[in-house]
Amino acid sequence: MAVLLFFFFLLFDISRAIPVLDFSKLNGHERAKTLAHIANACEDWGFFHLVNHGIAEDLLERVKKVSTDFYKLEREENFKNSKVVKLLNETGDKKLENVDWEDIVTLTDDNVNEWPSQTPGFKETFKEFRYELKKLAEKILEVLDENLGLPKGHIKKAFDGEEGENNAFFGTKVSHYPPCPNPERVIGLRPHTDAGGLILLFQDDEVGGLQVWKDGEWIDVEPLKNTIVISVGDQIEVISNGRYKSAWHRVFSTTDSNRRSVASYYNPSHKATIAPAPQLMKETNEEWNQAYPKFVFGDYMSVYYQQKFHPKEPRFQAVSAM
Image 1 (cartoon, rainbow, N blue to C red):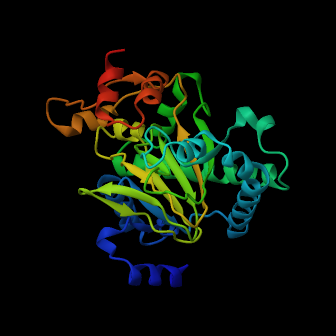
Image 2: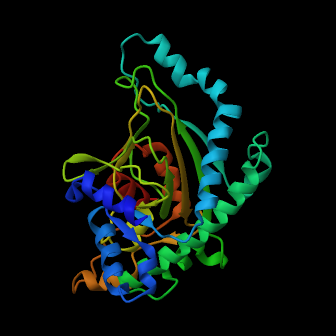
């Protein structure tokens, strides 16, 4: 991994690349420095690569294999007959709006019986992968608690809601962005911020396409083998009272490659009440400034489903009136 990082820094302008952070350094003498780097990444980018995250490379390689096999075996032919492909073929040179050049299947604990069943090893591999990712997500949330000066477990408790422990929602979206004959006419995934809490993305090692909006330009999230890309969601922005920001991001389509993307999201329970942490409202200024409303996450999602690809600020305004 050290060699990979060396070539990454050699090839790319570090000032224009999302941070690459070593999670294992939290356990050593560089803990304070690593905590600061994570805090800066959450404040300045809302995105960062995580290396030495503790998920075994053997498992990551299996995830890649079963994801690729799954698309070829169970999804490729269906995508050729999908709505977006038909629209692209039937609309001449017109640029497509309100659609994405993306194939998706969603995995949750509640729909295990609907998980892909024809691809050997898919279910077993993703059950193991999701278990490891969820553990990693909860470790990261504790790091965010510490950096924000909150009691250990504050964010997780907020996400669990009043129903008790382990009610936070954990889902996984297995996506593929197939080769597109006219990428100038349709985007892979339209610009948006993530609605939930913490997103853990295991993206393609070789095929790029993901970009983050920063300082008035789109910055590539370069492929870096076996890293987990962390994205701050809207709910972390609220709990931090705006100290941490969810970032606009998008995926562009390409003509010659099929990009793999496995995004898992650690979200509040739909019944959870989300609000800025009191410690951070007090810290903002002497008037206890609360920059974000208090709301039920399920209400926020009902607004998000209608406004996902629009600026996030009106969503906060809309949910505050509910």
